[in-house]
Amino acid sequence: MDVLSDAITAMRTGRPHANRHRLRAPWGMRFAGGHGCAFHVVLQGSCWLLPPDGAPPHQLGAGDVVFLRDTGAHGLADAPASPLRDFDVRRPETPAGGDGALTVVLCGAYLLDRSRAHPLLSEVPPVAHLPARIGRHADLRAAVDLLGAEVGRPRPGAGAIVPALLDTLLLYILRAWFEERAEDPAATGWTAALADPAIAAALTAIHDAPDRPWTVAELGARAGLSRAAFAGRFTALVGQPPLTYLTWWRMTIAARLLREANAPLLTVARQVGYSSDIAFAAAFKRRYGTTPGRYRAAPA
Image 1 (cartoon, rainbow, N blue to C red):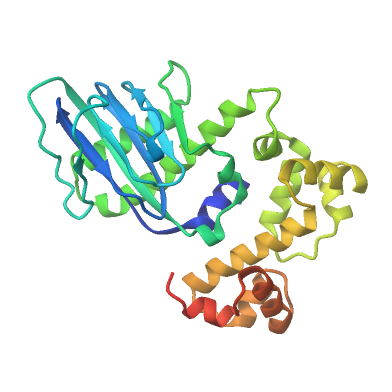
Image 2 (cartoon, one colour):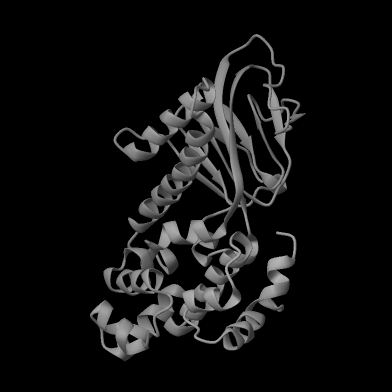
């Protein structure tokens, strides 16, 4: 597993959803807050994003993609002053509009388990705007086109295709944002870590084999650095020492396995590098403040 895919897999829960809207000015939609993240893509025309917390509106043009890291209450409208109507995902029909300019938008949302949130997502701003640019992010544009077509004209197989395309789109959005940020020579944190071949190699090793009894020296060898140089560089970019990150990632995987599978506790423990379910339970309680059994039984 690569780090970005692995991080999203660990956090994602439930089923994502998306709707395609054809709207004629004047119009406005209000989206309630939720536990996850959201995106909006302008397929035709233009509109305004009214961000959470009263932040200044963002004007969006055809081809623009906007990603909201935390799905706080927000709106989309043909103009900042247009009245907003509540959008209900259970009744996703397009809200009534006027007879003015046409805008077509693709809107979707994902549920995330914030207790398993990967720190790389915290580096994405609350509102990440990816404007349309010729020759940029062709893979993202292709995913948008496919998803827009499936949502706009459901056909046999759409029930399986749309969720898969939504997950693909989320990764393309995040990849595009990290790639654009990595072009800044002053980039730091997870952006720099993912772009750093040495640290990326160590992170990949951890994610490929979280059950392995890694040492700092072994991870440093994967990175092609001395133990001390690797430990310092990893900590500076990732924000925590290598073995601290390893333990955190093991517990994150364990939390997902406990919620999504019925494997015995010892099986889960061994999948994340513990030969004893007692040692695993102690480490898990330090991370989540409860036992693995109670965590598994609690509502998601």
